[in-house]
Image (cartoon, rainbow, N blue to C red; front, side):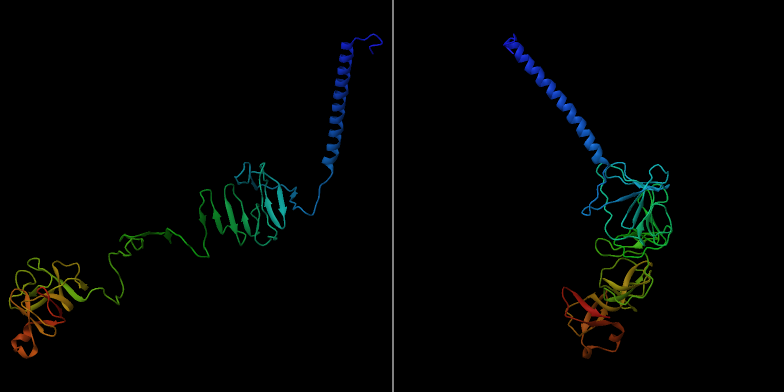
Length: 320
């Protein structure tokens, strides 16, 4: 080209221009052919036995199951979200939406206990009202999960692992009316009155509450005398002994102190008392011990009981 009169700079710009024309032309042809081939491939159906398929039906219904955002499942009966998804005998009426939604339908045919969204007589899970999930084994609303997450039914068959109410009654550790009794943190059961038959007792004696003219210590021997029902023993008619832990309490709502009438009780003693001796009441509300051969005829009137062990610290265990 220099021979024909072109300078070196002209030759350079000619080659640059030719290169640009060739590049632009080739790019346009590439885009055109690529668009044509992708359009052809797009209309060719894709099918392979190695991947599961979900057939989308064309039927339109009024209720539906759909998701407009990832992680959210909604129900509607407005007809806005419609369509049908059928797979392996499982019917889900509605439309699933979302860029990353994943649906697991399983491989077992669910006909008798399937999922449907039209509230028909089919058994299973369905939505007949927006915001409500119904479960039915008879074609009606046996079990209902409402918008607040509550379940209601005529009968629940199964095992309950946690319940705050039973037949409408709440549980309580206190002696509160119309509640279900619940053991407290110490294992105790509280109530105002127990109606029934007691077969065992924790403590040893049977005691009745009597009015006393003053408060007497445990183990004091009393007699029927004084301004109240009983008083300190001075040689009168024997009433009993102030009980420590009565096993059976009679006249519990009365006034006074519990007086042991039968059983094993500690009693205040005068001097040493030995196991097997008769404990005889003496003035001052105490007892003294006598063996059988030492007793007189009058001593029989003052017998409180028999010593079950030797006395200790001026107290003796007596069987009344």
